[in-house]
Image (cartoon, rainbow, N blue to C red):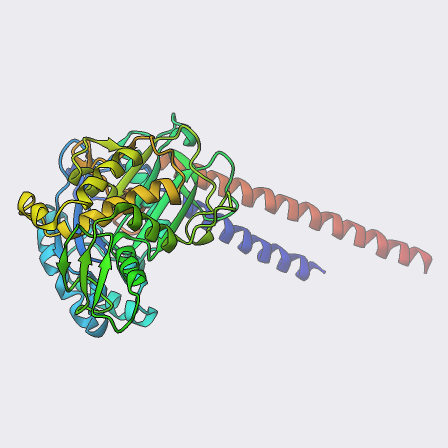
Length: 483
């Protein structure tokens, strides 16, 4: 009996310590710390590996001594550099993926002080372009990139530091970036007072916002331990980025698969070119410049169900943006805002009026008026597409102003800022290593909690043992008395 009690004590004691340890190490500050305490500024590098190119951003903040969300320096322009072509193009030659990023790595090295490279974290987050290839192809490309990052001189620890993120994560990070720059990610601001975010890239489309009621589907939790926790509705529509959608709408205009020419209402009047449709580069596309017909084709591609009040593209659950909530548009929304000469915002109605005039213009005159614009041929479609996303897909009032600024406080509004902010708020490293720092107050509380918990448990076990032993003795005494 005594042995079983002792065994139970040690088993429960070990389990309790393990549980307490795991809980507390999650709460104790575990952030990368500068090896030189005199350093005031810390840096972080993040790669946005998109479908059409890769861009690197170098963020900085005042080095922290406690567990807290870093206050990114947004009073000056964030250094960034890009290269054309997404890393998914290396699916047939994955070993070349890592070396292709050396130019961007060297750019980051020119920003971060050399003495700080070894403890400056470097991340890569790949988006929709990589989601379109097979898992094996993804793994091979990422292995090459991880090898290059480990040899870069920057701090690169875990495979998770270079990975393909989900569409939900991309949407959530974009939401964080937008609201952080609007100074809305703080304790004093209720989540319902934050802004909704739409982002349209080349291959995917994201929408994210706080719902007053907990959404039954398509939700993600974003927790900043020292600020707030946000439950977001977020959904990513793969294949509904601007480039993918344009390609599919052209495809829908093809009457006979054997035709070598197609007339598309989504291009300027008398536009005439090949190398437009990715399904057949030799297909000649001729524009008719009819914005209304193009909008109808786009709505068909969206597969909307008018009878479903809580649905959007493809019948996916969508509760609607809460009434009165401000909306930020990123990606294609920003490009449309700039090209159609709006200031910082536009409504769907105002946009469609300008798009309609532009699309009906002769291609030759458009080329004459816009000589330097490599994306000029796509401007007609992009304007119509954004207007239909607002009114048809997400049921935004056509007269509601959508903010579509490329920068807030001179900082590019891009999801990588949200990714860096979240990563550095939740980053973990092995306890006891030189580059881990601990919040003294939390650490002392954790130790005290552990001590009290174990001591209390030990007292309970001892008391129970004494009671059991006493009961057993009485039972034996009664047996002897009977004899």
